[in-house]
Length: 67
Image (cartoon, rainbow, N blue to C red; front, top):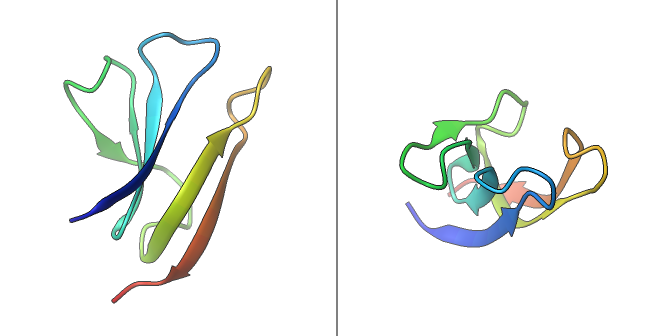
């Protein structure tokens, strides 16, 4: 699976997001473990990503169809 972009959380030092060909993934431990985001983006190709401060629960991404 290709990682197309990464976004660091400007508030949580160990939290990051990855835009991949298989959706958006999130880590809360500096990248040791990644999990699929709890969003409706799991089956889309995420091409870019942005964590929006100060409320980093808001993450923007540009998507396209997977495959």
